[in-house]
Amino acid sequence: MSLEEKARAAAKNIEGKAQEALGNVTGDPGDQAAGKAKQVEANARNAAEDLKDNARDAADAVKDKARDIKNAVD
Image (spheres, rainbow, N blue to C red):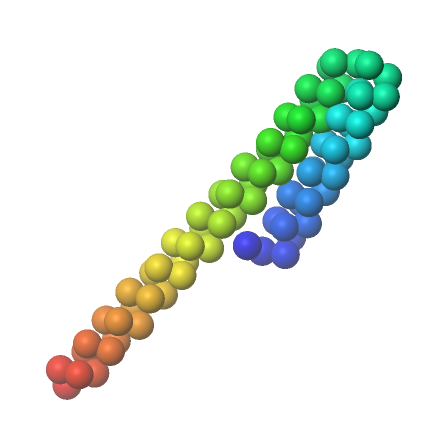
């Protein structure tokens, strides 16, 4: 995950927690729901970046294995 995307997701999560807390204090269900939605968005961003990282790692592992096989055959 890029540092920039991690920072964006963390900021969105903090924003969501703050908005949810405000809604809890004021009793505003709209703020509570919006805050929770922002936290879900942050979790989704993290999950998407984790998938990208895992796909990149898997591709690198395949490339390394292919290189090893080629070198063994040569």
